[in-house]
Length: 375
Image 1 (cartoon, rainbow, N blue to C red):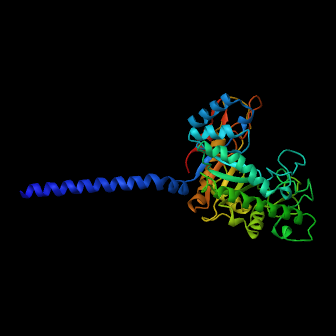
Image 2: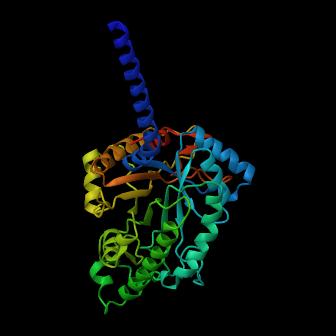
Image 3: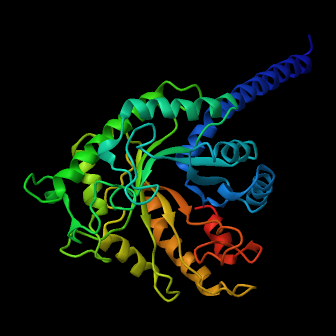
């Protein structure tokens, strides 16, 4: 066989091996890279609640609008009212951070409004049964949730009936929750310990689910209630954000939670610098408990635009949003912040424009475009 033909055969074999190797690598990438990308990227999205008063046809239109606006993730409560919306959104490439209220499946009754049933009355077994009834139909349609957030702002009386209204008006800290002689701390602490029993039940259901075994379990979004103080900002009893997290950690939170959800509503002052915004976050200790192992998800953040005129002049808010995102980028780079969910998409139809909404006057605002941009 001529030398040239031998070289040609070797080249053919080399090309065949290269193609085969490339095919194997690409197949592995398709399997592994989506999870890797999800782990490394920041989840950016919107709180959405206006669909609760809309028909299925109107919900479909809303989902189309969200998709066209570039929304990849929504945050909303999981219930019979939201199942259709969550399912259809998923079919359009929009994932959901599902809020699971810990007193679902229990006999605990709200004290003043729908959301403030006492955590001490939550029933872990009843919650597990309720969650199965919600999650199984979603999984039957192929839905994988982006995250499961157990509750919302359980460190204030609006979402935790164990916190008296108005109570002493203090902001409780870790020492108050751990003080058996405090007039208010032990009752709240007891409810928080029961909350962890519900989280254990949630993790058990998740671990044995069909499609959501790896879905992050998040601590309920903690409200920025201020640091421990004799007087809260609004005169209502509450518990400090970082102290609530630390108390729950002392009682086993990190065995069940993948991360911590927190809330903050920063200044809308367009002149506030990035450094001033970082200093405010540090002073309030909003992200002080976040680590790469247990990162924070900012499941509510927003800046208001109070004008009711259309078209909306959103220039100042857009400037403030840019500066706040630059401040938050510091924590993203440290891998301590992995989720950024704006509150809120839009207000309820037929009412005044919602100041925090980013879909205003029939279109996505400039601030909204920034809030939805990748981090």
